[in-house]
Length: 345
Ligand SMILES: [Zn+2]
Image (cartoon, rainbow, N blue to C red; front, side):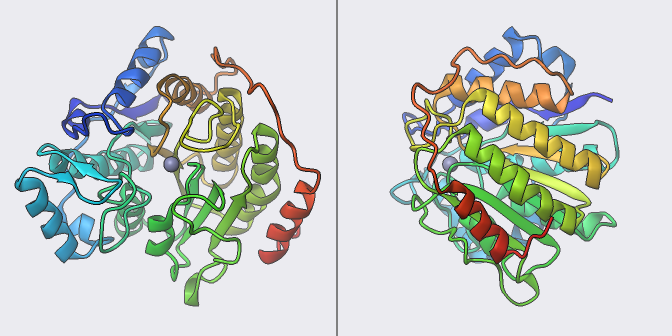
């Protein structure tokens, strides 16, 4: 079966002008998907708008209506980081709805797996307000939707955006049905995501943060995936995997200090696919979060599609970072996280 993708002009209605999270991110991705002929191998999944009830599974209704009112009156800066234009309301509803359609396509096995190329991104949006370029928490809305509409009880969210997904963590902090796993630069925006934040009440142990010091690259990310994510997934046995895919840990991306390469993102995608093959009959859906260096983003998304389709070749014109920093005590860090989560295998 083919790999599906959500891709639609509606996402360009979120016109943030010269904001770093701009419309040209999707333009750049589409250009490389076309040039590499990856696009012609994919099946298009049309998006739909999320309903207010679906959004309200994650966000306060007061926030939803005040956001609508702000956008209806012309938008502008909602906070020092987050911008909305008159078209942002539609784009935001279709971002969450596009991801839900991708979940449907994967759950019904219309496609093998899928990637929703949506904006605005979502993982910083919290219950009561927008935050960090995000209006609605798309991945959280989709996880709630999947749990409510399919006979499944365990959703694994993997978030490799360079920033901690504080909104997603908040949405499921007391919930054992959604396991949130995040690798992120730390301390860094939004300054949440410490290793000791492990969940509470029924959700205790279902929140796995891997807070990484600055400058790390492929080697450390892959070690964290192999030695923390894989055993966490083996214990959790997910029935659906949702991936908050941000590519701002790329060494070319100036929003962070990390040194991941396009090839590194491809290797992470390969591990994620192997987990989904082994534990949840390949029910795997990606959604776009950050990634601000246009070329790095476009090449890395394309490499992810190659891995989703089972291709082995990766197009990586940017190559490896000029300097690779590997801390001598990284094994101890991994051991510490494994011990917090009592991982034995
Ligand atoms: Zn980010």
